Amino acid sequence: MVGNVDPRAEEDRIMARPSGFPFFTNFATYDAPFATKVRLALANNWRKIRTGSSCCGNLGQPGC
Image (tube, rainbow, N blue to C red; front, side):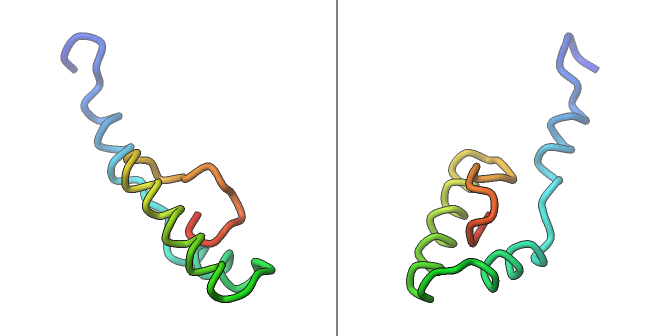
């Protein structure tokens, strides 16, 4: 451990990714037209990539 930074915490944050099961469940159960589901999935995944997070903040939507 260097200073107050725990390198394992950063590694856990990067390595902790959800499985594909919630993605498909949210996609299948979300009540919207197919095109809307695809748009939301792309937008939510782009938000996760851009922020480096494993959650986009829109729980229950496709891609989150």
